[in-house]
Image 1 (cartoon, helix red, strand yellow):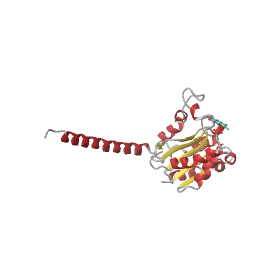
Image 2: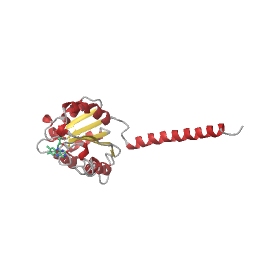
Image 3: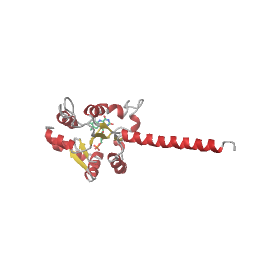
Image 4: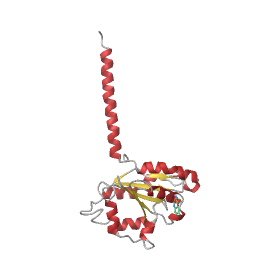
Length: 210
Ligand SMILES: Cc1cc2nc3c(=O)[nH]c(=O)nc-3n(C[C@H](O)[C@H](O)[C@H](O)COP(=O)(O)O)c2cc1C
């Protein structure tokens, strides 16, 4: 499985967690990293054909960013507007991304308990990330469970370092596809049901009067 990580940060050089993740991902097998701010430049202009060719060459597409005003930094919107074009990613004949996987990798300043009803950010990350989820839906990509690191405002260097293995395991987990997980669960349940049926048969046989 080949993974493309599109990183959107206004100042990756001075980032704490996204730079750490970017560096770790750059060394991982079968992962291509791309710093969109460096690629798009100050004007945030992209070579659309080159970006689309990269998307086609990878199975799993990752948007990586720090959460800015409940969304992503502007460069990711510029990239999306230009690259996920009509006729390529949507509209008539626009099925190029059908079946690719799509995953969000994001860090927030606010703590996890603020991203709940009743917390000071009121809504969950799943709610804030809906536009990305629907972008995946419309373009025929499979939306995978996001990886979220909360609490950057107070995070220690140690906590950031400790997030690396979990982040890498999540991003490279081949079973993140919800259909694969569901199929495995069903298989287990079928196995359990068969065992229960077998057990009840054994029990009723052994309980039968001799
Ligand atoms: C312009 C701006 C907007 C931000 N908006 C939010 C926000 O809406 N919610 C939040 O939890 N943190 C917010 N933050 C905090 C960042 O998410 C946090 O600093 C970032 O995840 C740290 O990542 P980095 O170390 O890679 O820079 C914001 C920060 C900036 C600079």
